[in-house]
Length: 294
Image (cartoon, rainbow, N blue to C red; front, side, top):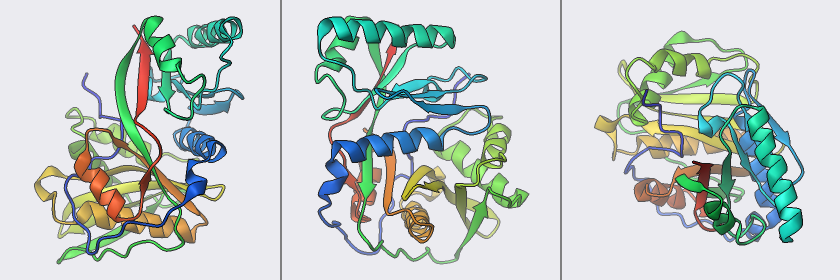
């Protein structure tokens, strides 16, 4: 079955009301900050029986009930460069995937993963590239204010206790179409949005009349906000809906204590990258690669 594309956001070619380049934020590029963001993203996806575990030299995300590689992978990988030590630890990590009955799947952050030639080592060991994203982050004290397009209204949803089925259904409809999901998956997407036990997650939906146009989600904990599933239905792209959703989530995250706002965007989605840059986001290093064992 063709699944919803997981790698990044898919808002399209939305424009914002003013051009913003953001401010230089050197802290964003420190290795300790990058790893904290990697751990924060993994924990954001740990809902229900899914869990994230900090292994010290890597971060494991695992879903016991879903074999989707996106939900079963290592990130934040910092392995020893010494060949013998590397081989021992790499063998242990392969055994970990085997014990979980999952294919080895590793996310690499160029400039931050270790050793520097880790990608070449994995390719030589039979891994291939499954996809890629750019990690982007924003650390400025203020966020861009993007007005809603004419005739639009915005509704927020707190998954900590708000069970407004109309907003959940609207968000699911947007995400299914924005991410080109398989027909019939709208129900499971809605269930995931409304899943209990995720107090740090919130969502918003922009409507025009009875039509849900754009949506997105945020996860705010520990002074950080992670943005996810930002999408605009194809027929309404290029009209500013996705930018308005992103700005709203950023502002809500700031008010909830998220000093750093971060997200992942598909490496080929240049239009979305331009929108995020105008909102003050910066790309953190080179393209993040997802490698999986054949």
